[in-house]
Image (cartoon, rainbow, N blue to C red; front, side):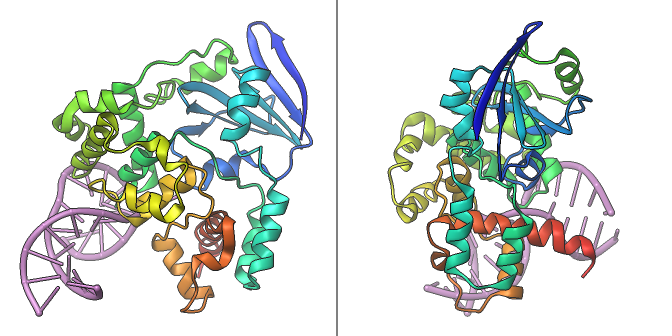
Length: 307
DNA sequence: AAACAGGCCTAAA
DNA sequence: TTTAGGCCTGTT
């Protein structure tokens, strides 16, 4: 990956990179790991996604092996977005590590067909809260809930470095340009306020998590330095957080690439392609990446072909 | 209309 | 320690 240049014309701020491999915005944002980016139309690019992360509104586009990130600059890209998109990782190495540890043919096929997925490094609180909301829920509704929460409790982000028509069109999506709510803002909203926004029985869980993080009972920054198992136990202390939600928070919000969330799709995968004695540990330090490949493989590639 | 959606909690064996 | 129900809401 080579940093090519900074674009700066008519107030548009962007960076361009070339020689980018193993990065597909469609797969990255369509594999269910995050909920705040939407596809936007821009005739200048093959595909483009926009959304808010780390309190900033950005847009990422890809043409061939070049990617563009709008509404940012070189310094910010290097310190924030490179890590956010997982572009600081060598996915060739990750993939060969996974393939060297398992001879499972379905996994090999999944790795091949999922090339382009990268695990995002999301904000820890956003990841935790998002996956609390995700339980017993479907993706469109998860996105809707997070959008209305952001519109209600978030802060509107600066979009001045964006292509105007892209940002304007995207603003028709409720909360699209608002930052993810802080724990404090959700505590202030209160459990009843959360219920009004149709979070249902999750209102109590969201409130508990926000309250614990705000009070310092749960210190998310400390999670980074913990072993995955210990980190899992720590997050499971929060009411409404079980192994699946905690694993997602660790994988997508704390760069614990060995965290292996087991949801209904992965259960299906394990039943269908793996022995009964399979353990995630057997896939090594990148088991979570393998999980994401398998999830995408089963949910978006296999089941669409009719079983 | 009944089941289900990227789980978890609680109560009961 | 393990196992059924129930759960907000929305969609099919």
